[in-house]
Amino acid sequence: MGPSGFGGGGGISVFSPDTLDEGHWAAGLRLTYTRPDQRSDAELAALANQHIHAHNTDYNLVGSLGVAYGITHELTISAELPYVRRDDLREGSHSHVGGVALNGVEQLGSVAGIGDMSLLAKYRLTRGQGPAFALIGGMKMPTGSTHKESLDGDRLETEHQPGTGSWDPIIGASAAAPLGAATLTASALYQFSGKGAQNTRLGDRMQGGIALSHRFGGQSQAHRESHNHHHGDELDEHEEGPPKASWDAFVELAGEWEGRQKVAGEVEAESGGKWMYVAPGLRYNAASGWSASAGLALPVWQNIRVSHPDNRFRLIASLGRAF
Image (cartoon, rainbow, N blue to C red; front, side, top):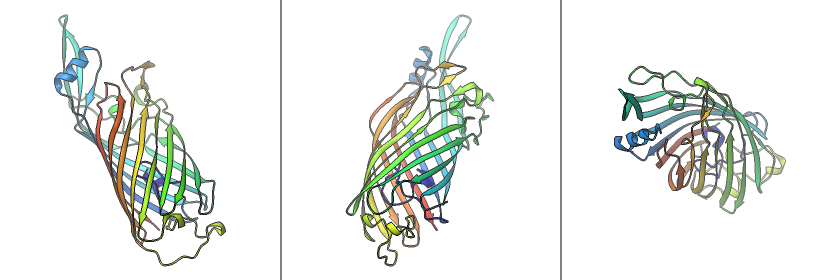
C-alpha cells in the first residue's frame, strides 16, 4: 500500500481511491513481516536431486518509507523506498564429484539492503460523496542493491537480491462505495517485470482484492471526513465540525500472483505461484492527522511452485501522518 494507501476504507493491501488535497502531504512507515513454511534440509536436498534449487528463509522483513503529495485535488503522486531483509537464506544444491551425485543444502546467509523505489500517480475520476474510482500508473525503479554475496563470497541470484536491476511499469485501479458507516473498497495493481541484473527477468506480479471497513467514532465514512479528502471541492462541500478521532475495523479478501522468471532466456518452470488470504485488522485515525494500522494475513488457498515455500502468515503495521 505505502503512501498511496491513505484515506478511509481499504485494508492492509487493498487501497482507497482517495487523493490528497492540492498542496497537502502525507508520509508514513510500513513494516511487513512474512513467515514462510519451514522446509528441512532433507526436503531441500531431495528437491535438488530433481534439479529444483528450492530455497527457504526464516522470515522476510520489509520496512518502507513513503511520501505522497497532492498535485491537484484529483492527482496525487507518491514514492516509496523499501529496506529488505531475508533472514537465514538457504538453498538446495546439486553437484557431481567423481561421477557421484551429491545433494545438499548451501547456507547463503542473511541478505539485507535498500530495495527498489516505486513512484506512483493516482488520478481520481469521481467527485462527491458517492462511489469513487481512481486510476494508478507508475514505475518501479532499480535503486536497490544487486551485488549482495553469499557467505562463500559468491554473488547471489537476482531473485535473492534486495533490488532487481529492472525498470518495471505499474498500472492499477481502485474503487470504493460508501455503505453508511462502512465502506466497500476494491483495488488491483499489475507490475510488468523488465530485464534486470544478471540477465534475469523476474515474473510479472499482480495483487488485488476487496475490503470491507467500518468506522467507529468521529464522523461516518459516508461523509469521507479526513485530512485526505477534497474539502475545497464544491461537490464535496458539507458542514464540517472539529476533527474527531476514530477507529476503523476492516477485513479483506485478497490475493497475489507472480509469474515464472527467466534467467538467460530460460524459463524456470518451478518459480512463481499464487495465493489468496483473508486479513482482518484495525486502523486508528487521530484528530491531529496521525494514523496507525495493523493487520494479519492468513492464507486460505495457495499454489506456490516448489522453488519457493508456502506462506504461513504475513503481519503488516503502518504509521502515517497527513499534513
